[in-house]
Image (cartoon, rainbow over all chains, first blue to last red; front, top):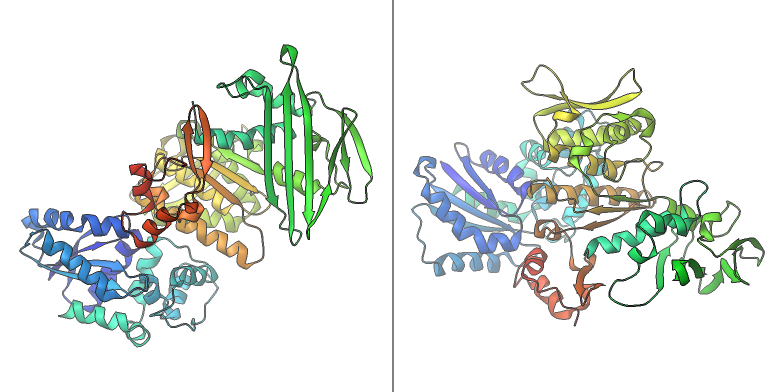
Length: 190
Length: 362
């Protein structure tokens, strides 16, 4: 299945495709659009959907619009995006799924410290991190905490590191610690 | 003509006044660098007074704050004297004068009341005569490590003199030498710069500073698919500017500034790099705070909504020109703006900046 994603920024651009292709075998993230922030995503995703439909060579079957919820109710955010699309009267030929990650992408990447440690070792570092003991589905400073974990493992907060962690992270571990990830998986697999 | 740059210019002026060229008096030197007092005075009025005041926390002392003020007055024949200079250390609620002006002379004063010096007020600052036993010396050291940057890639494409690498120059022209200095003093810091560059420019496989037999040094990078190294003069503008910015973020403590002012760091960079650059800055800052070290304070001027979007309202100072005056204020004081940004109703901070909704101090 060929899909496209519309996300907020470069870290999302790096990590989401890796996670999604691991969740569903045969799924291919063909096109990625990052908008440069939450509000830009909200204001420009309909235009980007139109742009994605314009090139039939991409053969996109589904588009996921993914936004961090910043720990706010994800239903409201998803509904807002969906209604924005309805109000535009744009009816693309592909399916559009809106998803609000609770709270931020980093909440998921914190779920499995072994992934951080693996990437740290691969990059020739010698420091390891322990598991963080917070409720990842509600912890508001997940981004900061994730960066601290990266620092402890001598890794930098750059998109390639996000992608590498996403490529080795234990998906079951994320599911067990983040309800929102289970919901995300269901959306991808549906 | 400038607005934001005026603010940074105050820091540069003060730095020049405290750290002039050897043998020069600070104020005279700082004024001469700018074409004389008439080029420094506000051109919208007849006032002959330049007044600079600043407040700073002293991280080496708990609950300690410095208040510094200098007033320069221009008299007949554009003759400039230091009308007043004061440095106060406010410690646990007690205010102590560390600079005194008496009978036309400036004195450095210790907490026990002892006075030293007796510098004439003509063209000089008391601060430039600081010495290690003076109780205000840490403030002097703090000012010493102020850095100011307006990076110019064409200048950065030169090889540099090896011995000139201790401090990255304002336009970055000694970038190669500076990186060699970092490489020699902290392989960890150089490694971090190099690793970040390789992540952000995946075609780069290694970066190194290469000395020549003529006491010069140039930067060279190995790229995938190329058999020979790319030398500094062939590197892209964006790559060089990003290299310089990363080197300032990861500079080891002994080479880092206390205050780093950067004019429009977004120049030559892809907007997508803004988010990562600020993420790295925040991550590095947090590392220093977690290890109980004082991080460098960065002041960035910008025209870029993309860069502004990476900051919270609390972190932004808005500069505008009105009736010929440069004014600065904190938009976070405006409740309606705070609410707009929190609710993300209008948009990100950058959108507010673009639409000029932040402007107008009223």
